[in-house]
Length: 124
Image (cartoon, rainbow, N blue to C red; front, side, top):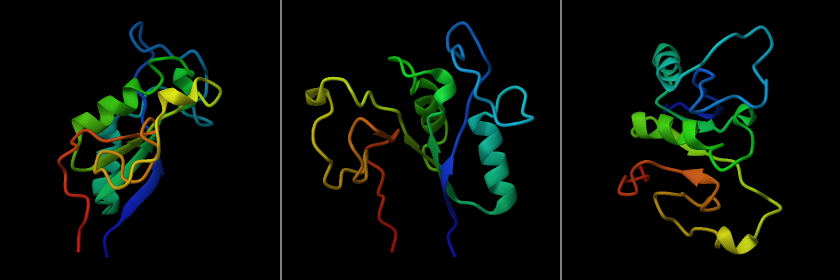
């Protein structure tokens, strides 16, 4: 049986480039939990792929999804990404629901991320 973890989070260190404007670490946790850490844990648990959801610790600004995108780009065969959207912004920025693009797999185009748009998402 294939195992896919449908909801994970990754985050890097608090840096000047990608600061943590929101202190939202899990209880008792200190520091980062990188894409590399996630993939190591996936391997240990026998998980083939995972969806990493943008953490609110990066806020809701223009770069909120940056670390999630970098994680997916680092492990394009293992990770999928779901980003945050500005729900109260201009709806014309977000377009329509994607109808099967491997880059978005049926998610709202601005809310789902994939590093490789040529990846075959169907596995029989």
